[in-house]
Length: 393
Image (cartoon, rainbow, N blue to C red):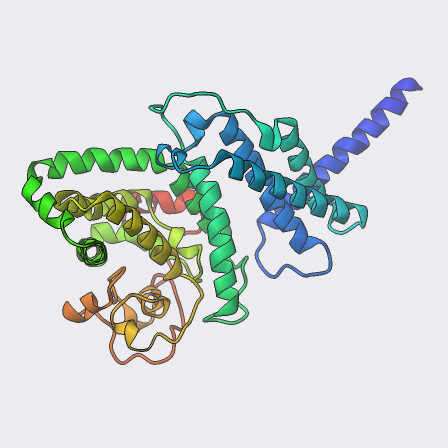
């Protein structure tokens, strides 16, 4: 009798846990609109916040392996702890209330459990002792910060100034792009190590102190504009190579296979393309020797523009659209419309395409269809990672 009283409740608990995990997994495999009034929107927010908090707790426990050295010096630990505490309280409150009122109970129960696990492992009070700097690492902190910043900033901008009204946040294939986003952030340590090694090997012999002194003597704003221009010229021709050389196109086609343009679409990029492009772009900046403060601002500019130009955003740019690359300009580059193929290569300054004869001319309205012509790219991160190496028939 005692055994029955123990076994039956245990089976019920295990069944509920399995059902909650299954329902949450099914939800994450779907796309479409999140209906309000059912605890689904708040449940998804709670689940995202809870998961990011758990990852943050892990980063606090193992900073030498899970945080990016370049970012460690910029952190304010107290501020991060306050942000994490607020996120845990918000996620915990939303999940608890939804479970209490029977709104998407399983999803919110999973979010609540993740919050409890985060708290059990120290939450926002995990102590950080001294640790070595020179260790292999993955950019978990960069992933957390960039995901939070991108969703808060760019989803808001997309809702305020949409190019395509009614486009869903959880559109088709968002899962694939999120995996690209995560992997490319986690591998930032390996990517930077590879890029730095290649740059020193390929371009070290070109260094000239007189060139560095001259470049760094230029005032900040013109030096920054020169920095962006130099990077964009290299990026332009590298980008054009990806389109016009069949071997390289197989890597770049992964990026072009996104059928919906939004802030997340730009993350769909083959890791080898990312490394090759960064070697070329950072190589010229290394040779010219721009000041550190200029490089710091350039990194912010290129990070913002890379996401913004893929976003579902439309603004009245006026004559500025002939000077800088805007979402309108770059959306046409991703179009599979005949008029747009192999056009609009620049990443920062649109006038480069007009100078080199690759700007789209005479188009009206906006693209009708995105993606690679023929729609031959498979969905899924692993399949896209392996696509360039498949034998061609």
